[in-house]
Image (cartoon, rainbow, N blue to C red; front, side, top):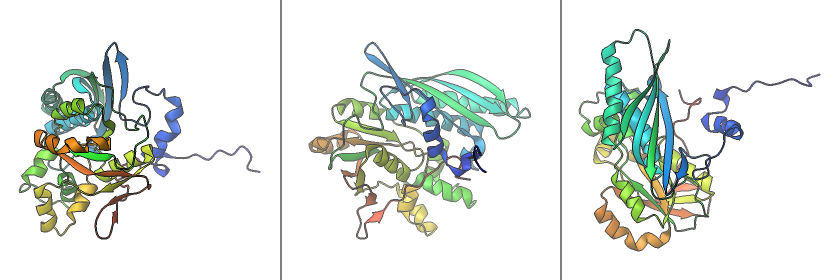
Length: 334
């Protein structure tokens, strides 16, 4: 009776990750950065060109305190962080932008200046792109082309990770978790200067590329933190078929103070923020002897924890707090 009946599956029933899983057979995989990485890479002679496209609708990505310049800056930084996490130095950015016909020219120029200035801050040239009209919510996509002389660092390690391999991060956490709380609860953000700076002018330190060069024999896996630290750890865990014991999460002092003010857990702000644009990467455990010197040379470098064979991700506390893999996911989050 029901032979031949086709059930229509809609995207909101799946979520972004499962949607991508259902279309991956249509996409040619990159040899150097295979699916499900955030960028692709091609080799030309002795150099690698690393390419990313990233974007968002303004409704989903704009905090109430952000102006159009901030949106442009953030859009460029979001794409740039993906190529830096792969070991690439940003060279060129391009954009595709959809705006409403009643936007004034001043607003459009602010977006473009934000794109240009963020690109320049991260060593890239903004070379324009495509302008479109949209009848509803504005949107923006940014392409970044980066260059690397080391092999691109994949999300999935090219060889199996071992128990005791180290999980490192570049950057501190908690400010974007505070930003989300402030945004949805309409809290005055003016007193929280670091939260403002983190969300209006997100930056990725190019110095991490020097660190990658120094550790190129030891780095196994890397990913930027765009959907929250918890989700990034679980992404790396799933794709590498391992788990993590987390012993240290570096939290910004202002995030701790914000948590005290509003009776929140600072660890939750650190784990379940988003758009931190920090980098999490895994290195061979044999690098442990170099860490003290490296931390002195590279401010912002911290050890998060280590690889375990058990398929779980947890923070090492008295209660062994399990980290739930929860972060921003298109088609699920509102």
